[in-house]
Image (tube, rainbow, N blue to C red; front, side):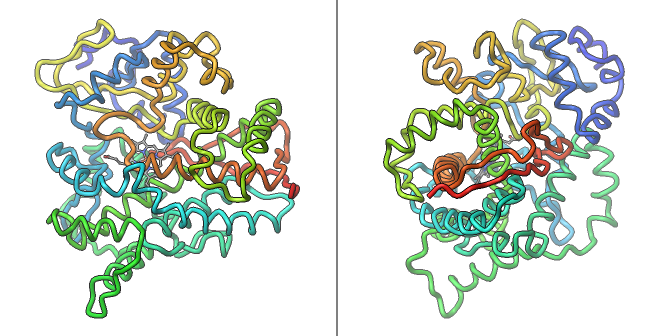
Length: 463
Ligand code: HEM
């Protein structure tokens, strides 16, 4: 492997042993190292024995596009859950493309742009609670507050009940912690899946009993309420209801299937949406002229305190600040890895044999100056408004915030709906400013999904 891939530049030790990437990931530095390697060596770099990161957008159509064959790499295996002594791959962790496709199709109707409008009332109820909670504060940690909001919203649109995080201003029943435990495990062991298997999936460990999380227990109770004898399953507009309807045609959506899918959804919705919302607001606080433009746009739109999605979905400047925020802050902490299929593949002029792990780190693609311009590294939402048609097309195609292709973010319509409602709601009601004007947006990049560190803001009511 070392010789076959030695034409791809990278640290010598990274080409000899995956301990290098494991060490960097555990320290939360792999993402930064890969960005530095791209800045030094160009679009192809090596960060592991078989692992290649490509920052040229050409990779997107080849590896993540509809062409079959590029299955998820071994780093996803460490996410496979264990239930009753058996490995049970989830939507994200299954490498079996047929199973993945069937699972996605079974619930796809619940995530369409039209379907997600049904969940808007759940988002509204949670935004209302968020605004009340924030109005009691002068200074608060925006990172935690937003995470409590996204977790409560997820509980509501998943099974019609908040987890209760905003109410207690903290984690409830370790729901957040348990999700994070899984993302930590995924991040820390992603580079050494064989060792992870030996330690956690041996005949003794695999039999250890695992109690279901409080969140899973709550979801199960809701499911039983709606399918049990006193069957009360009318009038619900949440994912659980959609999944129950879909289960009539899709046998894989049995009780564990539905609960598994709900847990995948809630896990995927919390830290991702929270850190993106905070990143967008952080950039606005750091760039007052940009904040002013957005405030003017919101004022002109004459919106209620909690705007309807239909009123904000097409606001051009809001759209631009969300896109730009997501371009400069991405949740993935290492490349989204895929295995090169039989016959190998040539990307950006270099041939990679079967079995090589190729992938792109979204942030590295987002810094590509050929696509985003010479100022790709700076915050400039206007690039989404003033670029010519062709450049805009290229920028849209290279935006990897929600990934691309068959395994792109299934909840992106929900995420966009939430972001375009909660960001205006907060900015219209409060004047938010950084408690420390010099503060930067810091995160722990060692888990699979970046977790923001506390970001203290001062808030003053506006209306
Ligand atoms: C701004 C917020 C969000 C961002 C940036 C984001 C980002 C991503 C990314 C990059 C992936 C691909 C991961 C990979 O291939 O390794 C993904 C997958 C996924 N996301 Fe999101 N996500 C967000 C919000 C949500 C929400 C709100 C939900 C649920 C309602 C959700 C559910 C999922 C699911 C289920 C997958 C797995 C899809 C599959 O493997 O087929 N995400 N997300």
